Image 1 (tube, rainbow, N blue to C red):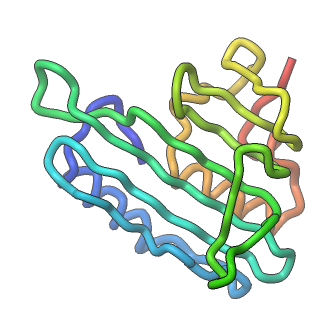
Image 2 (spheres, rainbow, N blue to C red):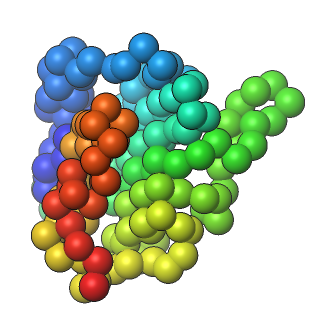
Amino acid sequence: MTASHVDYVNFKARFDDAYAKLKLPPDCTEEITPTATNPGIYNWTFDWLLVFKDDNRYLRAPERYGKVAGLQLSRRIAFTFHYGPIIQRDVNGKLIWQNTDSVDIRIDKIRGEVHMHYQAPNPHYGQGSIQGLTLESVDMLKFVRAVLQHRRSGKPLDEILGFKIG
């Protein structure tokens, strides 16, 4: 769901179209439905949180977009695509997550370069350690579809996403 340069209206239209075609499994609930915060033409944050009740796992997919200097478009400047076990919740039941939590897979760019965590919070695998997948090009819906396919088939995520570490 990402393009190198995009505006909010086109981003939202493309997302809504793909989201309408997505079939979530019965054990999955959206604790945060796909939500844009401060949607504007140039800057916005998008978040989505899925919880899988049968094995106490979650998928979180926040993205932040900002204006590209000199253009009338924005680009994805930060994201975290995380799938792993729920470690804790607060007293109101809200999911609490830390970057040190166990993880099946997380691809993120918070500061610096995009990197991957696979089957553990450490190490961080930069693009130079990943073959077969351009980390920056992984979009939210590709990640969600890969996790759903993994859950349906039991196939490893590295096989589904087509990457090797090394």
